[in-house]
Length: 342
Ligand code: NVA
Image (cartoon, rainbow, N blue to C red; front, top):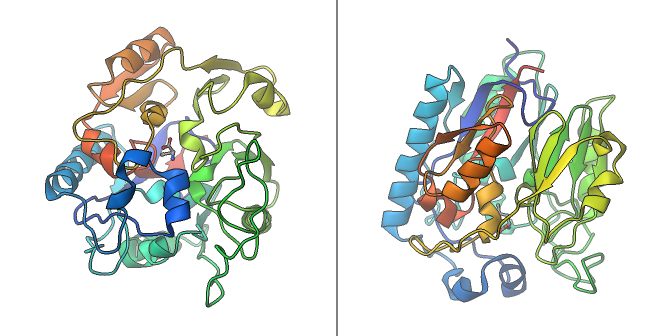
């Protein structure tokens, strides 16, 4: 089995990275970025060297250990990053590796993070994993380009955006988060966002293996950051989407989705109360890791979603993830697919 080989989001998962959440720290970025991407009621929490409450980080870490055990029981090889004190180095977390690493075929590509506070994330926590994967000569590991110093990404003017609401970052350097892209065979579907600019997409186009291409989805979310709360393919020909962030019409414009069964999430997700939803919208409910086109990791308290998954012919595999949600994502964000049997 190669160490890295994945062409979609639903074929049988054989190898994966699962993040770690201990000692996570609120990300600190310019207020304009936080105001545009984080829930409005918690903006003051996003200040330098401010750790997440310990009960959240510690429980989230235990939840991710449980996720790793569940995946191992399913016969999947699991890699785990190193523990890092993110508060000490002014970083964010090791629990959301999907944001920082993109697998495309036999390539694994590191994000050129727009957020300065995330720039060391992969090097500090995931370097050993990348080194191990690179020992397989069929694998190509592509590290992030070095950004200019001083960084110019927030210096304006920003282009693009949704409904006259411009993106916070400009196009002065390459910027993209891996979580703004999803694999659909030889085509990647991506979105522009507050963390992904056109230089980032052009760079990614130049790095993906030959024969692969990138198409960009028209989203209607002025707070866009990460496509995995906008769409989620569950198996070949079946995709769920958030109807307030993308339209069916926009999805159908992509030739490869023309004949897919496209299903809007048919309910408004219930607001998370405890632990509070410090970093994400309630659409996190659809941020799920699919194991094999049938089994799908779902938080046990997301009963409405689990029921809908069953109606769609999927089989929910329950794992508690509420504290992980609080830090920044669910089972899709917290993992990186390394091998899926296509
Ligand atoms: N920023 C998005 C994606 C989180 C994974 C949201 O809050 O919905």
